[in-house]
Image (cartoon, rainbow, N blue to C red; front, side, top):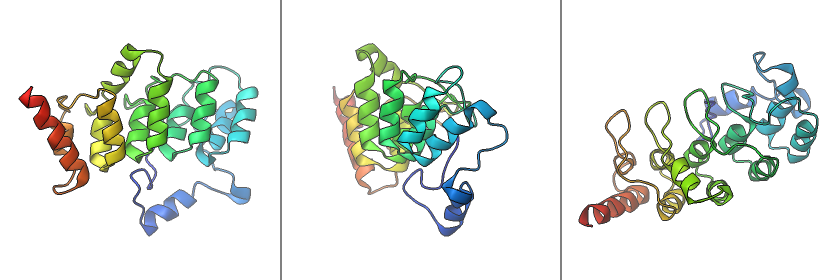
Length: 205
């Protein structure tokens, strides 16, 4: 899973320099050499959030829209990771798999939740075919046992947390480190308060 410095809304100068290293002349992304040549246009458009370029790349794509383009990430993973709402919409319209897993077992919803991109999270949930698919997405765990709610909790994104809870996300799934979502935010944060209140309500039922 690629992890840009801005993933959780925090970026220091060193991280900013690392991100800028992605971009070369003419604002084109310097795609890693391990990205297959036929997927480089798709990867570049996904990084940049250029919906027009993404559409052209998809029109000329040889193979599946769900092919990994970088570090096991599909184009949909990358667009969710970087918060490119228009590109996410386009990829979904073109049939991108909402449940495709990257090399760490994460689905695009994990990336959108980690970044705190509420509109993208809502779009992904709304685009699921039925309640069963939504439940499966919400309960998908990555290589560390984290659900999308764990990612939103760790990033302290209260709006995303509220949306996931309203959609039926589980508060009791334990990750590989023995943590449930409510234990991940820092104390005295809004995210922590929301999760602890919701967890207490579940235990009282």
